[in-house]
Length: 109
Image 1 (cartoon, rainbow, N blue to C red):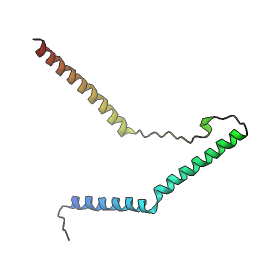
Image 2: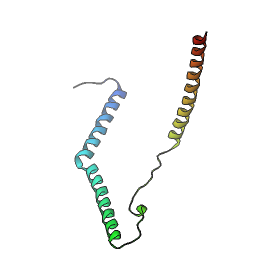
Image 3: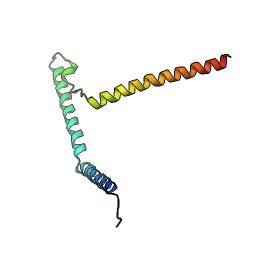
Image 4: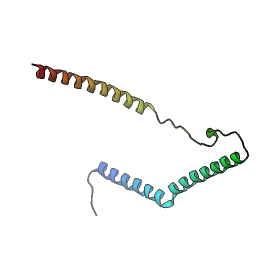
């Protein structure tokens, strides 16, 4: 048996094993396939409703048959990272423009 002297390394390895075991259990239990089957059943139900509405000459609106939920994944961390990214892009753009301006002086002379 391997003895790990670093407690942090041992903790990380144990954590990775636990996460792997949980993911393996979820995959083997069929949770994901069940979830996808539920979505398919819901879609088939909406298709049947659509066909019935066509047979009955009802007014059809696509929004009645779609179950689209727009999820907002933003939080304070993503907002901060978005701001950092924008500022980084502005700085990089200025540096590149300055670099090419200096290079153009070298080429012109």
